[in-house]
Length: 261
Image (cartoon, rainbow, N blue to C red):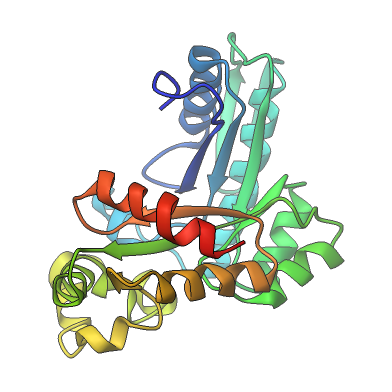
């Protein structure tokens, strides 16, 4: 991305640094990206989901324990980004005589995934530079601001199942994005694709219309994007659901973005 563009900074979606990936590895990866690209890097971290984290054979903890681990991980990442020699012996996560030797000149920003008051409190405690969420919930943006956060540092993502026909768009949305229909409380606990398939067995294409705009009509996409803007989110990323990336980008550039004003 950095090679192909001259103006875009780089940001990740939510990365889980509390199990399968140790926070020291994640901190170094983000710093190295900044060094190699000379771009502002924003690292978003979250408490993870069983699908990804259970594969090492370690127990997948309850959400309150995951939050404890995430808070320790954020402290480790921040400490390593300082460039100083660091030893941290936490209850869940530790580093011993660790240091990052190469740090980006612009530094790196740390964003925390949130879904309610507990994760907003966590973001405040770790001194997050922003929040990331998947629901157009104004309470999350307002809660962040009430805790002293910058409203401009509010991140989210909007799926786009663009296709040249309505039928094809509905098919793509159902095939590729029905996993999101049960909601995060279910999604975070499912360990395998077969479990997702079972949980989504009754989902129909029309069930996704409110959350995954599809087809060639720009109106539902504009409505979806506006729902996040109206909720107060200011940093939006578009998630192409299908394989036609060029078509999705053209559609966003020529039809959706101009309609947003």
